[in-house]
Length: 229
Image 1 (cartoon, helix red, strand yellow):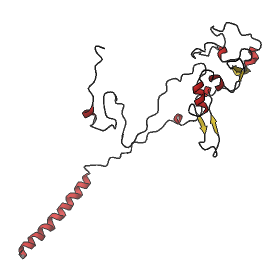
Image 2 (tube, one colour):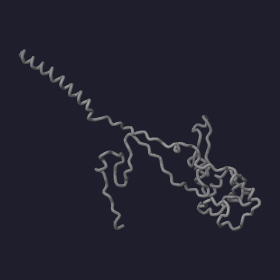
Image 3 (spheres, rainbow, N blue to C red):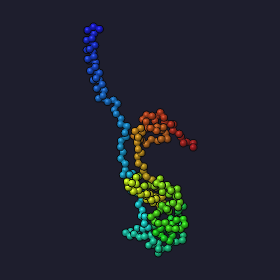
Image 4 (cartoon, rainbow, N blue to C red):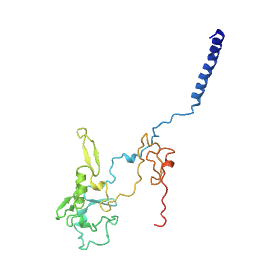
């Protein structure tokens, strides 16, 4: 190669290399493919979701509040005889909404002669602070699960060497006269890096388990009409 040819190549290289570098720098500054953080935005959780206070806080003593006074159950029921007919509209304790299956009258659970106690199937007294023994009369499997910690709530420490554990009693979650829970709004479900932001799409119409953008149209199932059924 002649000297003139080498000079031309060197001049061209000295021109297009800087131009190429400038073009790459401009491309980087333009940022045509911005970084998409796969971590979802942190969502606040209501304090009630982590609050360990029992849903209900009933008295574990046989006491009844009337205005500013507090009485033991036996103080009134010792002098007021209970009627033989128990399938009737309550004239006292009208705040009670008794809807508990076949337990349609008071003496299914309450002792007839000692109102400071509950009653078992044999007519023996159950202490007022042991209401789970009353529930066990009908809910044996649930009571067994409660004993082993798979039903109900345990507060305290997983490691008992670090601190005590306390088992919440049935009536600290369930109203004994009307046990079903009222409707509650659930907390937001956790996100994973693969799922991304969660919408409120109808799963019955879209096959998109990973919530992939643009993927739902390809895998969407045809809607089914209810006409004629």
